[in-house]
Length: 576
Image (cartoon, rainbow, N blue to C red; front, side, top):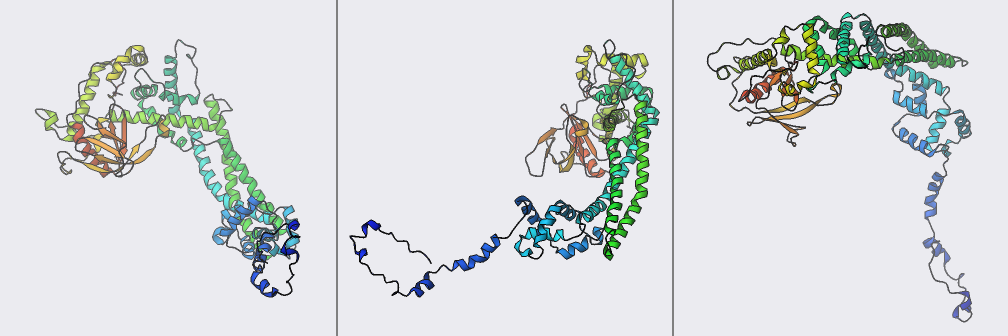
């Protein structure tokens, strides 16, 4: 009954009041009406809710919540689940790897099986998540089936990743064990290092660790733009240019720079154990008396899978053994510690090769190894009468002739002169000369890719252009640099602005007057300013040419190319 909230008087006050002689009219009033009007009918509607609250659950609340989320998207009854557990491949209708992992994570233990066995005939008393657990308990050899399906789904992916990696490592070790050019390059490094360290405890070394190689790019002279690696490349190019081919020989290392031989061997062992586990689990399913036909077909599929990968894995094991043997030979060849990790050596060599190649590319460009259009003879002022392409060549020729005049001995210097140059590069007397050669080695003559004036449409006096290109970010380590997509806009004042997206705030601007601009390759444009070097990559070779033509209008206009003063800094034969 719904209560009537009145205020009762104290029993001590009843004796002197009317309530002492009040009649009891309970039998007189119509109580049926009161019960009908004021009875609490909600009790009948709340009975189902109370029954729901009484549903039992034996799962941890957090586990039950996560399992409930999974079941919300797992539209599969018990019979369908049993059927799919007998199909080996997802393509043939089996479970996908995500469902296998989740069910394997929540599969019932022996204690769960014993607990839920009491509710086989009264599953309606359990929560939905516990009802699902009860269904899993009734599937025979559930854990064994899930293990089989997990291995079969992951094994091909592991093999496709592992086999090429081991091939790259074998190729890398084979090159390191037999490359003569790389050894000759190390001999140059040893000579340079012993000369630099002469007179101190680090000098007169018989050899050095391969992990030392990346430090060549970090050892800077008085001029911060000149490194020991730059000097090394110049000397090798001058005396034995054929040794530069070691870069191509060591290319396999670039694909295995983070490979750990110990980890690869461990993965091969794990895969062998997985195949053995497949055979063992299949035999468990067949030990049942009168196994179902679907289990027999399931085990036949497992046997075929094992046979298809057993031969491949044996070959992989042989390659893994060869990899270990070659690695030990390589360590002995270079005098490395037997406990050194392979990824440390591969990473050091890969970083050295990448930095070495960058310096070689600069030498090739500056030395005119790329094909350039020959300059024509013009009378009068060549800067005004020449076409743009010829004017660029003249600027490059002027810079190279000035470099030759300022360093005449470098073109015919013998080994003694090379040592003298190295001494000057890292001496205290070259501080003043370093600034004069800051931009001497830039690749202005790399504009070979600019199209002919006869095929190029005439440009306006002050051309403008805008569009997306990729910009190489600046980083302390060259290996951590990356290309970022930016929106560029060239204005009539000779400024090149760029932002992250179109119509957004400009990140930076480049003032092009007098800045050398060139093509590094078919798509990459290089702009050298006083502060830094910008590298921009267009979407195609044609677009890169269009950008270059517009930029050259502003870089060649009023460009000041003074004759360089004589310098004592050993910029080398090619002005680097």
